Length: 294
Image 1: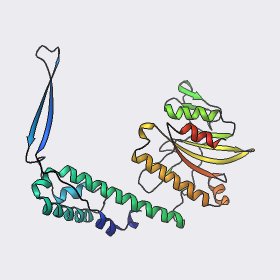
Image 2: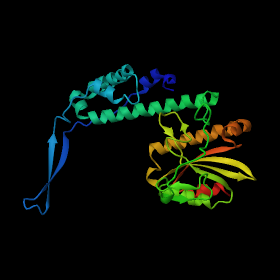
Image 3: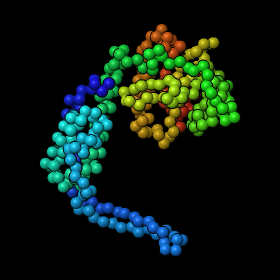
Image 4: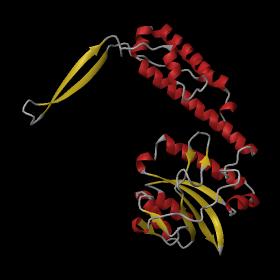
């Protein structure tokens, strides 16, 4: 994927406009110690002014190192770093650049990461559209459900509609446990399966990190498998973070292209004529799942 990214465009666009702080840096520090008699905690708070900034020199090399996660080619990273450093020094002076090194590094890291994300996604979608990348098969021969799973009976929960009768305690967190209990009560459910991270069905998007959804479930269509759902759950505290947004975007893309796939191809891959990918959060999972079973 990285080889297909237009790096010349990334280098050109990886530029930032930053309002640097010219005033001395005000530092507040708190020292906590134990009193002489050992019976209480003493806190001393002080404020100091550091006119010379944060105490280290901001250089093109330092900036290039900070860009390494998003710009893997060190020569391109240094090209960006040197250009931006010269621009900022010319406009604000070296003293101001050194003082604001943390701000400069953060801004350029974010810009580079955003550009990488946008271009990687564009390349990925283009390859999926051309059929060069298949979202439905994780391995050459395709993934299949395991036939057995070892679970300690003493520390496990029994379910009726799970593909395996028992699920080990600790395999489901609070939200996942609630979802499992909800699924157990659905007449239209054919089965559900607890997808295990680093072992089972995986979706590979445009980032390096693989997506292991929490559940795979299938609706009943007469006596055969109906629509298959790949389901990821997220706690409310994670609902708005970048990882959740990425997974939601990948799942929406998977569903979009699955709908375009032929029924014959879907049946060959997943054993069903329809498959959808969904991400639900702690605040909306019940409504979204209820809509599936109406």
